[in-house]
Length: 167
Length: 205
Image (cartoon, rainbow over all chains, first blue to last red; front, side, top):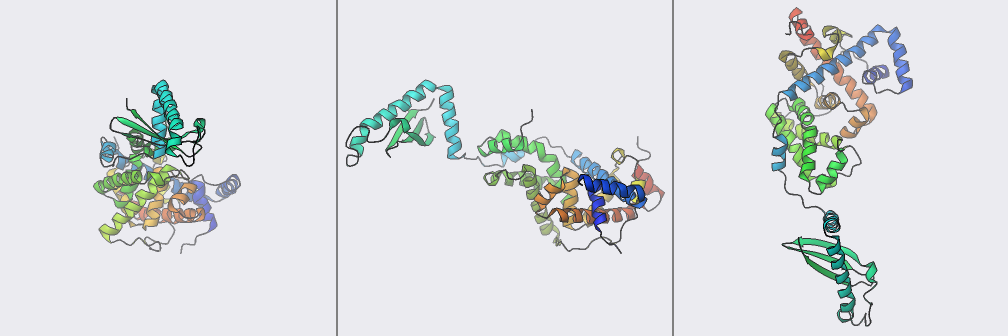
């Protein structure tokens, strides 16, 4: 009858080099005195090597050329998150057309400042009541056809819509 | 320099298919080997491997990087393989399944019948088939833990995370899995001198 003992489990873990230093020292001392235990460890290691060789051989028999492409062919196009698109678009804008982007943003904020009294007359009767233009932040961005659209929000709550031609 | 898995996953999440392709190419062999060890059929294993990667891609947003990418990938592979086994053979995959002898194998039997350096042992097709047969006789819980340990070389910690079991159970399960495998191989290898020659790789050119 097979009786599982802690020692058996430790021998298996020793064969896998998964013991801490104290346990390893304990098992090494045991192996020095117990040839049967040493054979158990040798068997575990022999089995591991045999199995690894077998699995390698099985994988070697398969030609994986084109496998990754066949996986990709089955994938639907991923729509990146809004944050990802924003990063990508802002990165492109700053990286490739920094002057145009800055100019476009400045024009958009200026339009918002001028237009805000008309857009929200009951709340914003005077200039700059749309909020601080320097604190305007991008809240959404998208590209459709040959145009890119950006939505800004000022600290006063006004929404600015900015459209520019895509490159 | 090799880009780490997490960086590739982040890029794949943003729609970069080249990044995902790198992940596929990095793990395709091992995912296939795990699947093949489970289902023992080349075409079905390739199918599972492909399905595993597609499923991983579909669920990329759920991967938060709390665990290693490959433990997640292998968990999906293993679940797909178990589903196939269930569907194909109506095989019981209960964890109390008792297959193989409960007697301990003879200590030293395997190691003395293999080459002194087993890694150099020429693994003939027949021996590989015996190994596969023995593996197929194990309960699924033993088969999968051996595959993940030996194919991927997963640490006990990774095994515990992948299989969602305590580390102590990993030790116990590996012990029983190996004992059963050794007992089964004892039967195969102990049938005459030709078996010993086969195992030792004698006569290999």
